[in-house]
Amino acid sequence: MRLQKSIIFVVLLLACTLSHKAYAQPLNPLITFSVESCTLDEALEKMFAEYGLNVAFSKPELSKIRIEGYSCSYKSVEEVLSDLLQGTDYGFKKVGKQYVIRKNLPIMPEEPVNQEPAIIPPEEVVVQKTDVMVSKAADTVRIIDTVKLIRTVMRYDTVIQVETKHDTVYEVKYKGVEFPWPSFKDNGWFVSPSLIISGLGMKYGFSEMENPVQIAPISAYSIGLDGGYKYNRLSFGMSLAYRSLKYSFSFDRTFVDGDYYVNDTLDTYYVVHPAGDTTFQYILDSTYIPLTTTNFAYRDVNRIDYLSVGLFASVDFVKLDYFRMFAKAGISADFPLACSGSCFVAETPYHKDITKDQTESVRLTWFGGLGFGFKVGNHFELVPEVHYKQMVGSPYRAGFPMDMRLRFWDFRLGLSYYF
Image (cartoon, rainbow, N blue to C red):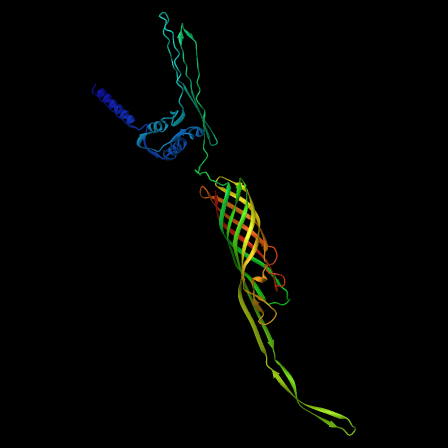
């Protein structure tokens, strides 16, 4: 008898302990959550990102509802969802480990019932059945939540109305990581200041067959301002730029003279023979001319500055929300502003200064290339471009001792502002 009482006491003690532990488990954990003013779908996505809570909702519907800033500490998930959905037409329901956000069911007005003393008063029975179907296909989670509302009015044991109500079918599609890109203005009138660094290339030739002159490109840079109009993928406008070109001019020329003997006559006499002939005799001497070497060497940096006025057009062949890639082409008229340096001549000292009068008054330059546009602000766009340019004809007038052809590889970095 004592053994049986001991066993019963141990069993009751274990039952109380297990029951207390089960009761103490946090079925609904407390969370701390805060969000600034945003749409309701963004707030729910932040809750999923911070606590891993599975919340199913319709993003197109909830993105139209905006909430003010919200903050709480140590509240249950149901309390936080109730606070966020307060004042909206939406509620939530927990299905397993998932919370489903749905529109609240409309309240059906009660139909008036004629009270007759001999008839049993109507009775309303509501049976709610939940049918949850979860199917996963690729990155889409499809949840169907069906609620059946059965209203049975008993009147002489006759069922006069059976109504079935289906909830909305929600589809939640995971799109990966999304960046909240702001809206950009990328159409209309724009201006674009720019800095252009060029790789200068040239071909040259001289009117003389033998010429020791060496020409080498040094540098080329430009400062420009573009302005125009952009409509969808097409842009066109005008450009104004200051361009400076530099190249080296050098030559080495050596002349050698002497290293030979020169004969000189010191005196002359003659002899008359009996036969009447006369023989002339010369007293000669030779002089050595020493070897003489003369070297002409010259170095200079030639420079030409231009004012360029041009037209351009571009078309976008890749266009995204925040990035675009385009092809660009144009032509410009180059007017010389200043010219300095030296050129080769055939007479000693074999060089002379270049003047602006020796350059052509205007030259055409065509270009083509590719560019990229990166949105960096609501009205601003960073625009790096790469161009190939070539000047038509020589920069110097006819009669200049050197014929030159100029070509460039331009790297342009601009910042466009859309009005």
